[in-house]
Length: 177
Image: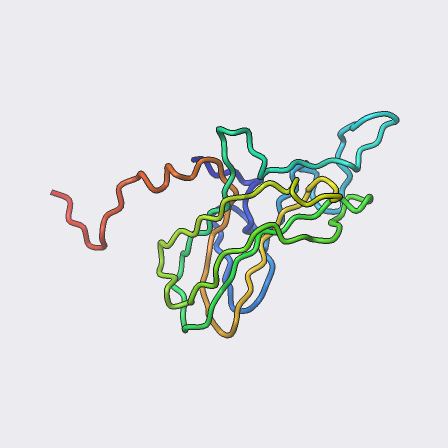
């Protein structure tokens, strides 16, 4: 598994986002790389149309399966819950986000259950099941906080995250001999 700066939901790779209330991720993934508010320099058909650009990441290719991995960097507080939703939006025709549609949501997780190092794995389902919708260009996360749970997270879209679970993990204060 590799982390890509263009596929992070944080403002930058390695910069945790503090979740203290209901909020959107500090970073938005634009699959064209042009950035919000910019038209991509891609020609998609004739005559020179470049706004109907998108990709259904959830469709995958059968081998490289996309997931959203949310890693807790600072332990959560209180028994209030946090739900994480992956949302996507098409280009609105001027290079900005159209209306967001929720693609998938995690179960509600108690803040106190989110200890540092916890990894929440959210498989990305295909957006093609949403009939009549445009192609997804923008992806973001929405953290829904039921109260006053506080936690800090890193969130990325990755391929084949099962490699994370195969790594050896050691308890705190492990002594190397």
